[in-house]
Image (tube, rainbow, N blue to C red; front, side, top):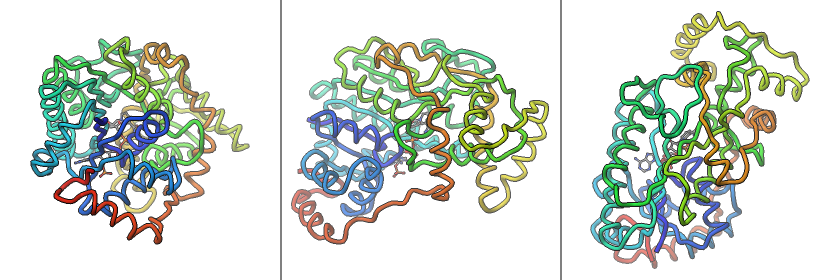
Length: 393
Ligand SMILES: NC(=O)c1ccc[n+]([C@@H]2O[C@H](COP(=O)([O-])OP(=O)(O)OC[C@H]3O[C@@H](n4cnc5c(N)ncnc54)[C@H](OP(=O)(O)O)[C@@H]3O)[C@@H](O)[C@H]2O)c1
């Protein structure tokens, strides 16, 4: 039996997969989008190399991982009947981490988040009816709280159907939580809502740069259109992934919903800019909150231009509501379960910004080793005899 994990080629999902491989003995059923077995293995290696070297990865691939080549937006993930049945029969629990984070695309959020989560819930339903499902863990987001201002939001009062949402991402993720609760009432469920996941408190390296790009852009400005005492809820990816794994594996978590966030311990813009200025040996920027409206207009205008400035402005445009809402997410539930709070962003933000700038916002990926190519292909081909979409032993 295995844990079915979606989104393992993504930033958080790869962290979750690597912790499961390192600290637990479970097998993993992974849903990976790819046209061939080799492409699926290479895409997974791409995502996992932040966490392990190639021999460790190959060992895990051969002994612990079953890749199902599929897409959330296809019926039965696009798997043939044999593969889908095998996935269902071998799934003892689910961690649904995949999503579209494209805040600008209604279509992408509708398809990946709503239709995709429905597919995952249906698979879970069948597994529960056939042999019982230990747990369904859903990685959601604090954005389900909708429009907020100067608040400390608690888990159980976060979703309010009469409140407007900032974007299609928040709206669809909110309905995903509802859908899973309605379709799997008899399954033990855990909902994880990370806040802004930015960097890793243990190291400077990252493979995800969207939010970092927006921060680097802001960090370079001499004047910021924010209130210096406003708090911003940022959490490192290692804390998020460790919490997801620990609570998914726990026999009886205390609660159904957990904010994976910094909560009332969140730092203010003033604290963060001071920490960055101290580390870089520079002057702190000035704060001019009255500029917010003009700043937003300039960001919107720049977001239509090409090049790095256009890209940063475009990212800033979608993140802007989450930067000025001065809202944080109560985290006492997860802190009690984990026995510790997340590291504050000021402790690790400078190495993250340096790494991102020095590497021009891209991770220096190692290619698939030449020498491993044919060897692995033969193993995978042997293991995949009789399967079309997946590669399972
Ligand atoms: N990052 C944050 O700040 C943050 C904050 C709060 C909550 N979250 C939640 O955390 C989860 C993971 O986010 P992330 O930052 O790790 O995102 P990410 O790096 O963009 O990863 C998204 C994952 O979803 C997969 N996926 C997307 N569309 C798919 C499809 N049609 N079929 C199969 N797989 C598909 C991607 O596969 P490909 O590699 O094939 O594209 C990738 O593995 C999401 O549920 C998100 O809502 C993230």
